[in-house]
Amino acid sequence: MVATFNVVNYLLKFYLNG
Image (cartoon, rainbow, N blue to C red):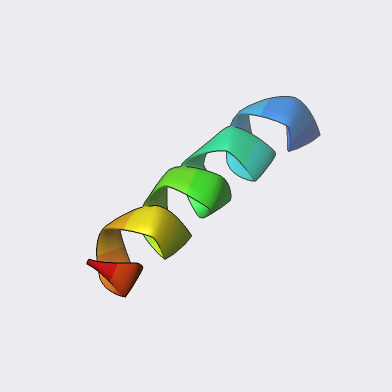
């Protein structure tokens, strides 16, 4: 689902940011 992907993308961005 797009919602799930959105959440994962957000978490990934935050994780990659440090």
